[in-house]
Image (cartoon, rainbow, N blue to C red; front, side, top):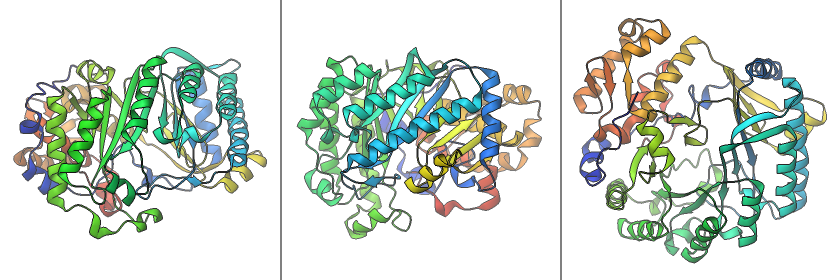
Length: 471
């Protein structure tokens, strides 16, 4: 199926940005990096369930994806909602690497495959992955390659804090096999940076971009956040212009989710300093306009890329996928996740590790995988996961083809959802073209809202208040 997404970029603001729609539908909702979303996981899912899933995946013998959660940070950013450990003690990270190696050995042994497992995607996230010393990075990659074969042409990415790296760091990462980097920027305005306890200059960020090109990285992505304290439309425009001057391949423009009751560091942010809703819409509008003028295309959610980037090409060809790291060009594959709080996708299961170092070390020392909770998907979950993925990645769904592949009567199976879709259609969030559900350009910033219609768990629980805003 070829998507009609990403037509002209010159009119992105006029077509993509519709303030009345955004105001009407700016509600809380899942980001759908997984379906069902992680809040559906439960503690009845056990190590035995995970081991059984690993055995099932081993029999398929297809390339997998790897994720390593590296939680250490030298200082705290007030907006951050990640599972992190603030420390300057490298003794703690050195110990952690050894336990990651132990977890890898236990997982691969459980799979019973007597050869290196093929890998097509790897990601180091955090925390701050570049907190690791060179010796620790080399050791972690050494242990990884003991068990896994990183195939040519794969996506091997790492999150970078530009304040914490040197040219030697980037050179080493290239040598280790990384070919994509994601740079945290958030905002270049000093007043905003001081309000969130993260001061970062344009110059040090530009240096990392330059080094990544020097050492052959294929892709550079920059993360921005709108809605931070002290932000204004004028100051954020300056940030966007500064980022565009660096010519990244991809940009992510996230909405700041202020949830201080969940993330304690956010309590240091004064709500009175947050920009009002009207300013946030102006920031988003201006950013969409500016990115369109610069030739970037809207991929989905909060992601933009150059039209010749692999993400844009994959979307045009109907081959775009979505996983816990966001949008990906790699085929849907199982994900093995290592480290505290990491979430894996194995066969028809999701599995999440324990959240603290003490729990993690104790489980591994006792010879157990550090499983905290998870979920085994039923046939309805699997069906809806595929459907939501199509809507989030391609903005369209051929209901006739989908019904045939799943052997269902689409109209009968989704009777309640279709009634709700009529209201979204009348509001302009979607169109029916024959038997195809199409999210038009003006509704694509709100694709999550369309996807929510098909979320059975959300419908049953109505727990919408636990999620971030759609925008």
